[in-house]
Amino acid sequence: MIRAKRAFTGIAAALLLSSIACERSSAQSPALTASGKAKAPQATQRVPRLVDVGAGKCIPCKAMAPILQELRAQYAGRMEVVFVDVWEDPDAGEPYGIRMIPTQIFYGRDGRELARHEGFMSKEGILAQWRALGLGF
Image 1 (cartoon, helix red, strand yellow):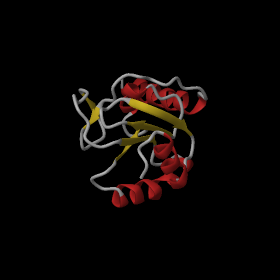
Image 2 (cartoon, one colour):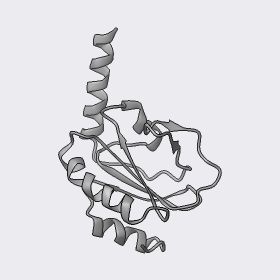
Image 3 (tube, rainbow, N blue to C red):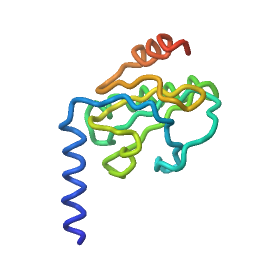
């Protein structure tokens, strides 16, 4: 049983990395617990939210880690920045429809998905995306 679970986890991670296309979902984003696990969607969202779905050992994800930390500190109270590690918890990416990591998902104040980007994204790129969405920071 444990061997089968490990094989499935490896396959799930390989599928996440090997796919290159991802459809944009208009569904409301799931809320996250402190551990990053998905829970029921919230009815209202007070601040825009950036969800970065990746893995702690993925090279582009590692490069994004200090960017996410900087955004979290610089825009505290105005933007929520969440990192979801799909290698630590393979099921955590499922509610987001992730096919490639890293993937950044931009949510509006109401919790609706506004945009999605796959691959590494610089701080300038993230802020430019927010401006393009009318939520300039």
